[in-house]
Image (cartoon, rainbow, N blue to C red; front, side, top):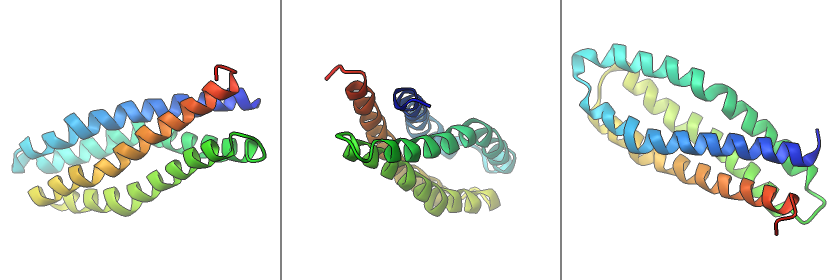
Length: 148
């Protein structure tokens, strides 16, 4: 795959996930607090199943694309942009599986309002990382396509 095509794929995945995480951060997670305790188990189960369908493939794709792109540009002037984008992707996986997933596992057991608030607060890290990753990915595309 040409580096330009990979850079476009990488940016498309980063941008799509950035849009999604901002929606989750500002709308979806805060609404958890409005779900009645009696409806919580079914709601959270549906949330987990449906969200997995939406995010699993793009997250795997963006991790692979960002790592491959960083490797492809390593010997050139885009080294640090590629490394930064890939580092953000790795950190996103770490934040997801070390912080967000354990909170969701607690919430799967019972509707615990402090854990819901922690989910929202801790998710700002992922929101920031995806936003930065999008900016870095767009900078790579911009430079590769000769616009800068």
